[in-house]
Image (cartoon, rainbow, N blue to C red; front, side, top):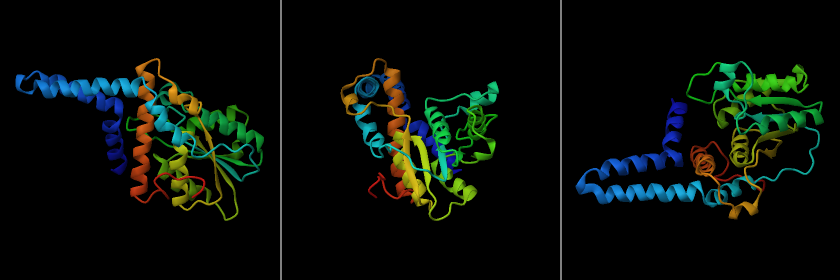
Length: 267
């Protein structure tokens, strides 16, 4: 039930959806002469939001603190396992087409495979089931496992956790499956903007010896603080991702599922 509630709440909290609701509400309210002023306010608020979130660099200012929180290590020593979190496989298209389809976070899969080839003794663990409400015929783990083998990684090294639906379940269910021991080292691979929450969650779930390896950067760095978007769809897409992540950070921290509101390497 909590999973369903969270997904429905996310839909209504995404900036792009909020702007549409404001615009439609403004138009409907504005049809009544007595409420025309309120309708205009809502419509202009939606237009302003579209300009700020769809075109301006505002979203880049919001996502950069997340992406820069955990720097990627210059070099990686031998580890016991590489844990890549779900989010890179489109389960709906994968199930419908019978072959692995990647999302815009596909770098999670490709970089994890490269790291596995560099460290041939490490396990490669993918954590992700069906994190969507819409029914699909495949799990993320299934699609990722197929790609890993296509990349030449031995099936004996691949561990697939296929039940988790969110970051908390990634940490808890993978821990139950792997049973990590004191002194072992684990490399956590996920999108840079998602890394602070992921590290906080894994630590709250009792993992030790976990090091961050962020991938899937959406910005170049500080240079993008002045970068305007060429299409509203691009800016809104990034706004949806960024604001959802900040909200999730607060929700996880308030619910005791993260070590801090904004976990960092110094914590």
